[in-house]
Image (cartoon, rainbow, N blue to C red; front, side):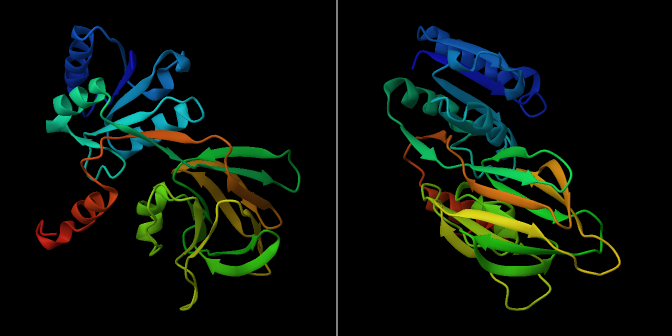
Length: 281
């Protein structure tokens, strides 16, 4: 590793103070580093061998999307609250840099998702997500009806606030809050989770990453069309309504995360998801 992007959230890393320290450390070891305030500011994606992200899970997700398919692994340093996608806590930055320069790390390849929407009156549009896609209602109080097909077989029809399709990486995000299962991030699978379904027996389903999903927007009440938004990693991508279809499948591009190996996924799960017990594991 010779060249590094340091992506520093200026609100969390005030005046990029820590980013400047990392940059000096790398340059003192005859490496090259560039500091940017957001991953969207990066113009030469192929320039770097690694991206170091100082921020929370949101910053890591944006960087992962920027470098998907580029063979540029992302090292997350937690400057946020939960920081489930980050690998290093702020006090251990120097230790992490030493390990990186010694080559004492692994790169974990993770799957992402693509979605495309075929609307009744418009051209097909597409989106990309590393955590999840959500097909959810637009109006407060109005549920939607969504029929979910897996490889052209009807899995179920949900009357709910929406349907969430998650990667293993995203299983600890909205999917977890919606009572979906947690998957180890290196798995190859998709989780289909109904959001607040109007039924007591609707549960999540885990399907193969090779499956192709189709979500058809139905009509909950006769006197109006269902209206929904399709969100990718929390960002509204497009609107859909009764008669529209959303297609979701594994993306061809993957993204790479840096693993230092001293803290396992299960260590993180215990420490970060058991915060209501007074800090006990």
